[in-house]
Image 1 (cartoon, rainbow, N blue to C red):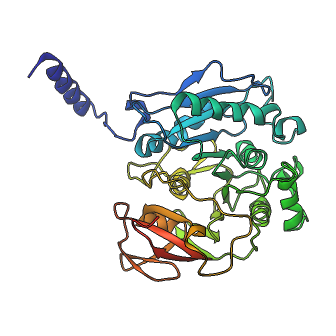
Image 2: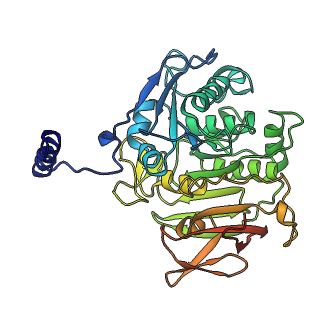
Length: 396
């Protein structure tokens, strides 16, 4: 054994004796770390950019933008929300924009300021420039860019999806607000129709007709900081943009007293029973556990895991499909119009493309057997109609 290998063996022994775990998912033990990017563009919103890029990350991998909440920072969200774990596990770069107290005394992203939520302006443009920088510098796949955030970061997530639907393939709003509702939505429900909500998004890009990003919405049913009515208002906004109704096409029960309602494969609404305002986390070493508890990080379910699964980050590299605003009602459209999804059996069930019974997995609609319900068995499903999927391994 050479001296370097001997030193590594001795170090491992010391770590075991002292009780330090060598977790393959721990960002603290990874070679990569959270790094500030000094210059990424004109930065009209005067934001800071931080990024986490797994060591040796190949080009063509997905990019996630993760936006912190009020009173938080990029480092805070990096340390608690669980995204470094999935960046390592699923091989993706993560950008953590950061607000400054000079822009907002509570370090909230300014989701309510007209000059910061419009395409080509302010904070929205600064975040877009961070995405452009990541694509150029890290070789990220421009077709697999996603955004998520908590509270004010959730509201800014809705901003980015509305202002730049051509940039983001999907987004996840956690305890946030509909696009362009200002601060009034935070405290009380509104009386807008789904069309009125959808019109706010369409007005962000007059004439843009899609494709639109897929959207998931996360809410704690006991949230008193941002009233839970925002959950259904966000659902109404994005189902209307997609040309869908407001009746769920499927639903499921998840860990942490969580339920999810799916609206075709375009919009999903997750309700976490009994938790207040914060990002749902579930500390632990299992694949579907993540994060650490703290202020506005609540122990219930690892939202970052289910968000990553819904985006197909664990699916091995296929580009998630985008559909037209009004999906065809026909159960047998032409093959060229049929989107495909490659993921593990477990992931297919969590996003509503399949169901599990007795430890086995079955495609929704066709009922075709897919094998064991786990994270290791992977299949490609083709959607041939609303909530109707068929096995399409090697055919997409």
